[in-house]
Length: 149
Image (tube, rainbow, N blue to C red; front, side, top):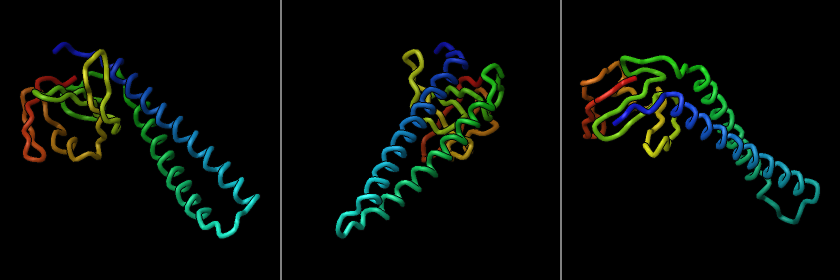
């Protein structure tokens, strides 16, 4: 497999994260106006207002987390070449490819699938510090690292 330029992986990850943040902001805005409309014109027996406030709170917390992850992404240099598995590394194994950055699930870059994983992920902990040729296993599955960059 040819090396996918790290800058392209980084860009795909960033775009995906920015889209998720944008979607959350839209949801929060919609929920706020729904809550406001209901508070201004209360209906009989409306117990869903506090439920909506709870959902809003959860969404706002998730948005904060997503924005923190975007900050982590921004702290990574797409020009740094990694020799071991660490933050910012692209890890190619015999079955899957990973970008150690944020949990971005599946990214599609030039037709190749790459999974964004955070440094908190058990998967990262299993491969941390490893290099090309090393193996690691998680959930009874063994992976061999064919490239790190």
